[in-house]
Length: 235
Image (tube, rainbow, N blue to C red; front, side, top):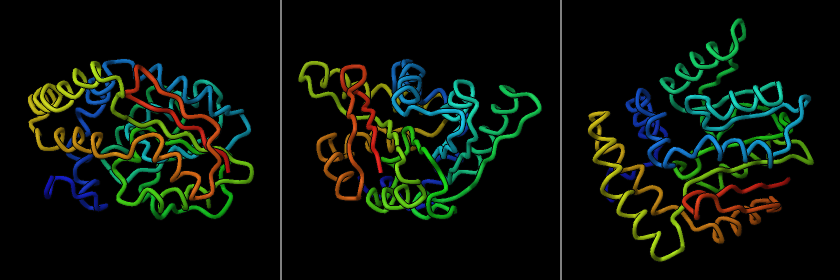
């Protein structure tokens, strides 16, 4: 895919800084507006309790972190490469929880700036496919989790049903970049996001990678006919 598939920290940071104003729209477009239900399922399967310290990796504009705080009132930290995304997350958090501030940290998921065993639970929604080294991320997530600890990974996939797969790929490769580009003025960024979904490892391959990096796969759940998967892992 050429230069557009560069997943260096610098490139990903710039990409998400550029699309911050339309990022929430993007997630609704990619998910066909069912992403709120996916996040709710993620939190239910992660089994967060109020005393858990939770790390939201690639927190983006903070939707998953905000949902977790609303559901369980647990202490949360959001980590993201993009300053633009974090600023939007802080703004949304302040609106949702008046008088409270979001603990937002700008940093790289391949070098998480926290000590060993800092968190009880960790979660990442739609961020792993943008990382240049999935194994390196898993090693870092494993390191900062206590034992036992859980990691939830919510990520886009491509459906296996041949008929639905063709429809979804048409949507993903043609319609989404056109609409996203029209709304944001950055068609290349939306094409990258479409390409990144198609090139991401399949769920069975991912599960093998998870286990190779010290995690036990508790569940691997297809959502909405397989356009998204929720993986629940345990250290």
